[in-house]
Amino acid sequence: RGGSPALVCDARSASGGSWSTDGTIYFAASDGIRRVASTGGPSNIVFRSDTNQLLVRPSISPDQRHLAFTDYTTAVLIGDVQTHAVHVVSNAAYDLLFVSPDLVTYTRDGSAHDPALYLQRVDATNPKLLGTPIQIAEQVRSAWNRMSYTVSQEGTLVYLPGADLSMPLVANRRGEVIDTIHQNGVSSLRVLQSRSGLVLSGDGGVWRYDPA
Image 1 (cartoon, rainbow, N blue to C red):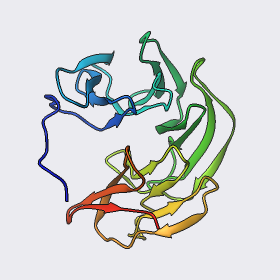
Image 2 (image 1 turned 45 degrees about the vertical axis):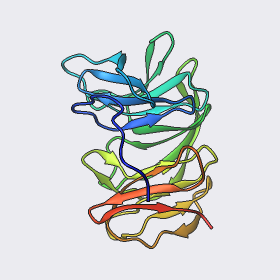
Image 3 (image 1 turned 90 degrees about the horizontal axis):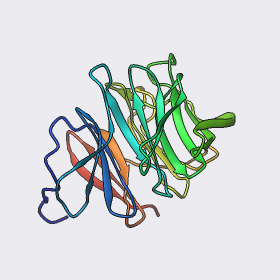
Image 4 (image 1 turned 180 degrees about the vertical axis):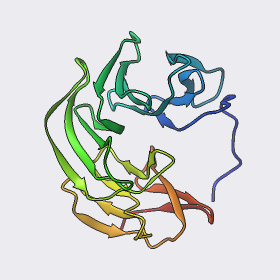
């Protein structure tokens, strides 16, 4: 059990976020990607969207220099949070998340309703995917164009499998399932920043999972 929730900032129409190890929270807003200190205060725009864009699913790299995010009208992008330069990384990928400064996970455009998940090297400085992608999960549940998975910087993957299965699965970088979380009704999950484990949420409440 935790304490009382604390207001960080006004975030109307916010859609997902990424918490950097330096205490900065990046989140998707109606006008683009914004950032705010985790201690609270006003938010500032980092990457502005135009009227035809919807920028979602921000993911900060472990070196805290680059931010990946998805524009659902075009592609996956990586931006430099210091220079604000933005480059398209792929026109055929969604929900790209940093695992390390040079490794990302993502799903592919045009795949099944519950698509496969891939791991691939990335050059974030000169934004582009490198080498051949490796499939690490056969099916990841999707809902409202969001993939239900999270990855720790140590390489542990936790995801909700295809709709015919209900329990979250824990896998390593090779895609080998190493644990099943026996909790029904989970719809989203996030790795804890400050300690091992993750937070699960769904219609039935919020749960914390600690690995054995």
